[in-house]
Length: 248
Image 1 (cartoon, one colour):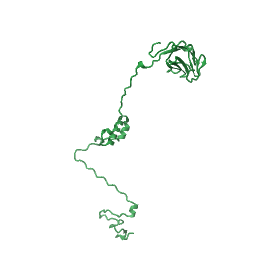
Image 2: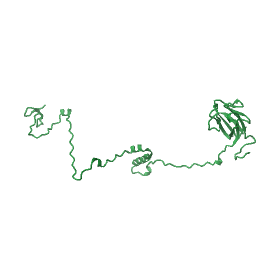
Image 3: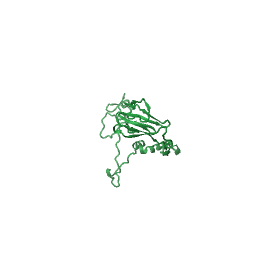
């Protein structure tokens, strides 16, 4: 509790030399009042006034350039990660090398993880003369429809028959499946084997459905969909191709 009074009877703190409640005379200079930190000041702090900036000195030399003629500020450099994100293809390898150098410090360059180097591998050239040639071993001859009189060669190994244009023997028939059947020639056994490939409408030989395969002999009639073909073999027990190619 304040126990000191000023000349006008105001109760003030003992540490105060000037009463803040008394009016100030015009003749007296303005003296800042220094108040002790009390509970009231802690609860209700006074706002701090920011200092006013000092006026700029005008140069005595030539007149300064206009704002439009002043040098433009240099653009701020982007972080390395942002630059790499904008140019991933060109700077990804350089960025990785930079990070590796920073991690290595003063170590040797051999410890730096560089990007993999592209290499060209020479592939062995295949000899065309050593590849197995698929000789013709028989024919399928069309008997009706647009394929009547047309011959389709049957070659050594597997011959794919179906509606797909990639087949060895293409049959343009709505009742034929894309991969309808396989006609296989086994040279070691001299056998022609016709196998149905899970077709929708089945494969027939001499109007009998095969389940799922059947050996073909000369003049068998094969029906796939609405198309009929006559089978004519070239190779048999006394006539076949050997490994060198000439007829034997």
